[in-house]
Image 1 (cartoon, rainbow, N blue to C red):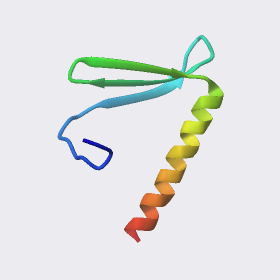
Image 2: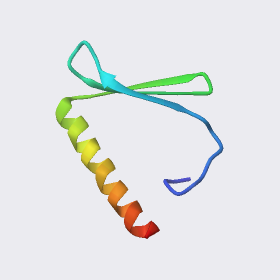
Image 3: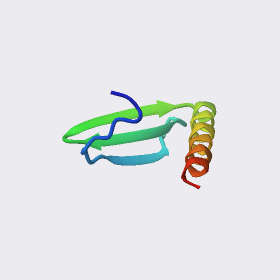
Length: 62
């Protein structure tokens, strides 16, 4: 299993700041909740990786 393995699972993703100054990605699927906290610097790195993935996906689809 990997990034290219498709699955038929629905999940909800919420992203927001915590009261502790962290950025939280909160994933909920099939009754499982996964809170993932990141420092603002780590969150910026994740955002940059997401943007790079978007550009790569756009390049492949055109």
